[in-house]
Amino acid sequence: MSEFIEKMPKCELHVHLEGTLEPEHIFELAQKNGVELEYDSPQAVIDAYDFNDLPSFLAIYYAGMNVLQTEQDFYDLTYRYFERASADNVRYVEPFFDPQGHTTRGVTFETIIDGIVRAQKDAAEKLGVESNLIMCFLRDMSAESAMEHLEMAKPHLDKIIGVGLDSDEKDNPPLKFAEVFAKAREWGLKLTMHCDVDQDNSVSNIRDVVTKIEVDRIDHGVNSLEDDALCDEIVRRGLGLTVCPVSNTFCASSLTAEEIRTMLQKGMRATVNSDDPAYFRAYMTDNFKALSEQGGLTDDELVQLSRNAFTVSWLDDARKQSYIEALDAYVEAARAA
Image 1 (cartoon, one colour):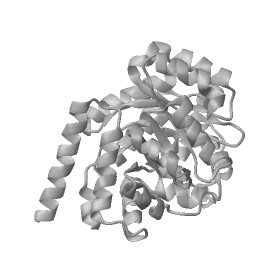
Image 2 (cartoon, rainbow, N blue to C red):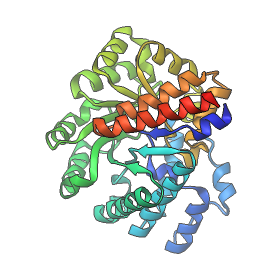
Image 3 (cartoon, helix red, strand yellow):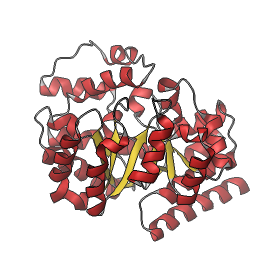
Image 4 (spheres, helix red, strand yellow):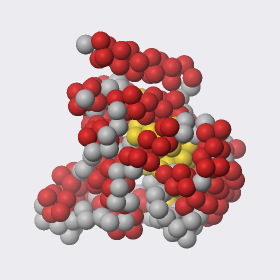
């Protein structure tokens, strides 16, 4: 099973590029850019990763961003993630980036996106990893700031496939950003929003995301299982849910393996993702293995999760089908062997 998981073609739809910043890379960039750190070694950074909820994670997460300053920094961050994704047989990615976390420090939007896009092109050519970029807004900042950054992105719409919403959900409901997302839709961008696990008003927020914002996908969304009618509506609309198992063990104290199995049984298009793998110490293969070894999911269930990810990606139908056929061919060959 371990080898089967390692070699299985995968698609990742919920990974924050800033969340792939490894401790060693933090120290490397801090030294290059003259940024003073609170920690004296990469291991000391890892030892500080004592997350028990979303706010405690975000406090360290945003501090780590400070070392990213130049276009080359963003290139290196992104390309190193793609190298790791390639090693995990991830064939297609729709990564997030958080421009507000950088522009508020004086980094220009162009510096951020130019470095990321250059890495995307190199990863496609050199590693065979295809990707499309999602720009996220920080929900604990104002809707006005989100709209400002959407306008910043306007000259770069050919580089962005969609917009998302992340950060602290408490007192920052989806409808706070309804106007921003409506404009993004008008501009032809796809929509997704984080609905983190076990937050205040989780179910009503998911309902608003589905029926009022009318997203194309839901990030996390595990609490939808508390409302059968909501689950039925998610199935009816064919929405994907980008679940992050290992991340959930930190922020929700559970791998949510049973919840993922229930989603599959209901016909919901659940997917597996790594979220912030440098901080949660688990990339894509690690998440699939955790579901197998700790959660008891079968190979059929794991394959379905991978197939779901390609299906609910924002690729055109022909590209989706080519990846699904490659997955099916791999499974058939592996089982024959």
